Image (tube, rainbow, N blue to C red; front, side, top):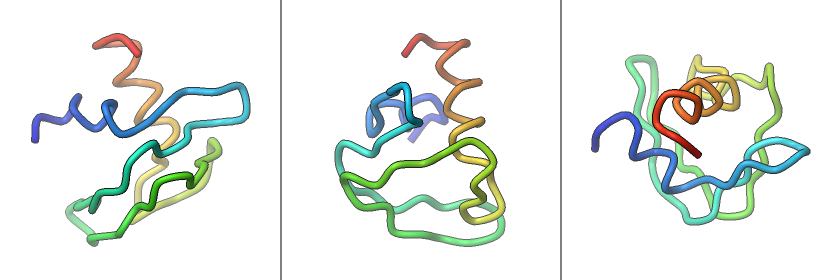
Length: 64
């Protein structure tokens, strides 16, 4: 999947980013199962990645 396609799995809300459908996130460090309904706050590390910040950056580049 292209890096910006991860945005298709999340919805941006005031209280963070919420996964809308489950998938496996694979980074250089780890693979993690992300379940629908899980919310991610800024600063929270997932597989060595601040996922909310990463999604924010992608959203500003590709639209979210």
